[in-house]
Amino acid sequence: MSNSQYLTPELRDWVAAQLRNGITREALYQAMLTSGWQPDMAQQALAEHRPFEPPLTLPELPEPAIEPGSLPEPDLTDQRSVLLPDGHRVEILMALQRPRVIVFGNLLSAQECDAMVASAGARLARSETVAAQREGSEVNSARTSEGMFFERGENEVVARIERRIATLLNWPLRNGEGLQVLRYRVGAEYQPHYDYFDPR
Image 1 (cartoon, rainbow, N blue to C red):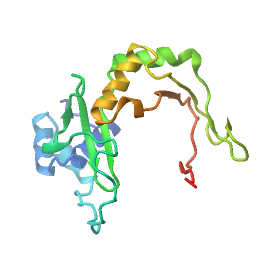
Image 2: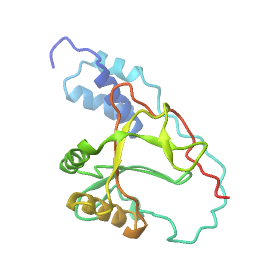
Image 3: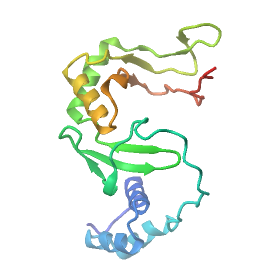
Image 4: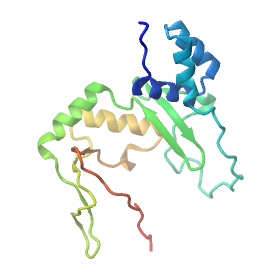
């Protein structure tokens, strides 16, 4: 690297991400030196981030009374970090037990994303929300995106993605929903809200 080094926002983000991913400060410091960073700049980059603090330990909660296999769930035995549901490499970026949250990376390829966007383009319309005073849906100022839904198995790309999700989650294809594309232009939003319906 040149003699004039700067702590860019990208470098700060990279350092933070490495620390979040469990890379030790010492290993990160050595990697930065090996990459040509000056010791004082590497130390400064690391000094801006607090040492990793383990998450709070929460009390064990009783298991919910749900029959095995009654919820969609990927096979994460052996603490797998990569799954190949249809030969496509899907990464497990994060997995929490309570609440049960799994973040997938590379669920769709760049080509699949491009195909979905191209197919959705002319069909995008102002997103709606569930109507508050009547049945149906309505335009709401709290949600300013544009969106559309694909029919189940509408085209080869949609069908392949639906099969991948079903295989990935060990969940029957028939239990899935139509895929949706949303577009948020600059300044568009969906304000904080509760996605909950009283089952009674």
